[in-house]
Structures are given as C-alpha cells and as structure tokens.
Image (cartoon, rainbow, N blue to C red; front, side, top):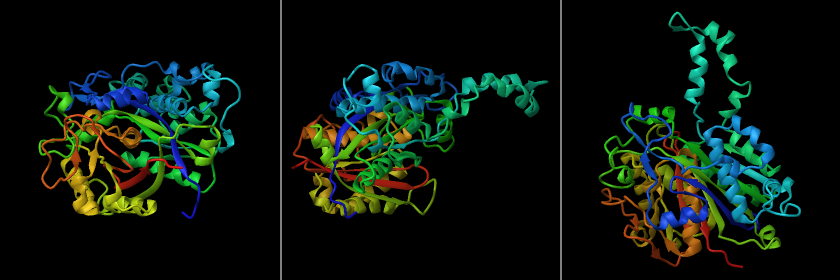
Length: 445
C-alpha cells in the first residue's frame, strides 16, 4: 500500500455461543467447550436439523446507554449481537467512547476523536421476526386467503413505521456508530461468511491511508431462526443426524462430517494506528501486517474443488505482509463441516504451504461454535489473535479423524504452548465465492 503507518489490534469484543466477552471466550476455547445444543429460540421440531450455537442469556441494557434504550424495539437479533460485541471491544481496548462515559464507566473526555473513529462491520441477510410478521399477516386474511388489498389497508398498520429498519444490513453499523459516536468512514460489507475478514481488511486499509486513527470492525449475524435454518436445509448442507449429540455435531475437516450447524454470534475488533495507541498507552495484542482477498468465479453456490480462490486470498495476504508461508506459526482455518468446502479449503492450504503445512499449528473454532454467517470470521480473527498474544494454541474440537488429503495439524487433546511469531486467518463465503485472509504478527517496537 506504500504506507508507513503501522496498524495494531488493541481491543476484542466477542458474543459467541461459548461465551460473551474476551476472557470468557478464551477460557471456553482453551477448555474445548462446545456451545452447540438443541435450539431454544423457537420450536425446531419441524426441521430435520434441530441444533444450533446460540448465545448465552443476556440483557441488552447492560451494553448500551440509558438514553438509547427506546431504540431496542427497532433492533433485530443481528444488531443486538453487534451492540454487545461493540461494547466489549471498546471496554477491552480502554477506549472512552460516548457510550462508556454516559454509562458512568469512564470519567472525563473521550480519548478518541469521534471524527477520526471509523467503522467497518460485516452483516448477513437479516431475517424477519416471523412471530411479529405473522401477527400482522393474519389481519390481512379474508375468506381464508391472504388479501393484498387488505394487507395494504389493515395488515401493514400492525407493524411499526420503523419496522423495516430492523432488517437492513447497514443498521448494525448504524447503531454501533451512533452509540459510540464514530464519525469517520463507515462501511457495511454483506459478503456472507467472508464479511468479517473483508471488514477488518477494509478497516486496515482505511487506517493505512490515513482516513481514520481508530476503527471498530468485524461482523455479526444470527442464523438461529426458522428462515435462516430453512435455506441450508433445502440445500442439504446441514448435519441432520446428530440432534441427540449436538456437542459433536459440527465436525470441520473430518471424514465423519455430515454437514454444518447454524449459529449466532460475532465479534468486533478495535484496530488503530500505532501512534494513536502509543499516545494513549494502550495494550497491544498484535500487529496487522497483511490483507488479501479474492473471489470464486466457478459458481455462486459451490466451491471450486481446486481451492484456487482460497489459495489466492492466502497468497495475497502473505505477499502484502512480505512474509513467506514457512514463517507462519499458526493457521486460522475456517472450516464449515460441509465436505466439499472443507476439502477445497484444505487443498488451498496445502497448495500454499506445501511441506510446511504439517509442521504448522492450525486452529478452527467451528467445532464448538458452528457457522454464524457474517460473524464467524471475526470470532476466528479474535481466536488467532489471542493465541498469538498468549503463545498458546487452543484445541480444535471435533476435528478427527481428518478427511482424506487434509494435512492441517490441529491440537485435539488440549491447549499447546507455542512460540507464535506470525499467524494467518482465512474466511470464505459459503455462497457468493468471496474469500479473504489476514496476517498478524507479534508486536515489536
């Protein structure tokens, strides 16, 4: 990019099925905890797959200022996940934003200039609240049939005038930036499971080119709803054989995988220029040094078996970081539990890393969390960042026996001590073909 601005990670905010907040998440990851269970958000008995990774119980009012509580009624579940992650990210980074000061959790003036505080947040297809929608639809029934005329005259009146604002993908970034007073460049990236990596990468570029000093970035999505469950069921992508054993249902990169498991969750990350972080004496987790992206031109709904698109994103990130593959100490693999996708990804890692692959530690969070769409990549980025920061590789549960030709080396018996100097993480969309990779390394003055 021709920039001498160094970009560092100073905050991690997480809302995941295995815990909310960075410390709870990290402890659960180290212990190999699974957050997948029978769905409780709705009755799943009419579906072939009845399990998901759902968030622990929470109260949204614990994460927003009092003045903003009326806005909760126009927040979808996806927005809620983003708000929780944003709160934890700014707290973890030690940022005194408008929200934190208004909540009485910091004193004095903000320590970030709002006009230099940007946001890039990945979002998915925000699914409608079927209970809310059904209550309105039933008022538009005439003689046992749906009436479009009655819907226009009466049915729509049962929805709040701001109802649609709950379901626009850009509303995640909208609410986060309003609450935390982030007024620098703001973008929404709706590219499926690649969204978080792309959003973090765009924030990295925003900071490099000097358009902001701090960015909150990542992604969030809830797939724990009937609409989001129905689509992969129709496409036969879900594990429908493990309803009685949910903890072992998500099995990325394995011979025994029979499909993915839906989930909800996400993460937001605080990136900032090194100069800004130093000026406020911030704790630094790692330094972002490379970003690469690509797309799969073969199909919108199936992976290229060669893994070409995934490999291209990985190679571009390594080239951007000016780091050779054999200098990477930890691979953050994505994994879906869908055999064709996992086989293509495994091939991509093998093509790029060659003989160094079996000697390089790998990590995937999918076995204990499931696939939470646009939020998945931010969780992976946080996991890899924490592993580098603590020089510890967490176990990747449910990753054995490995599928044929998969040479990724996961820890399965427990956390392993490691000297991690540099790490790479990959995210790729199940539909649409987008891929992105990020390289981080240990911070050195």
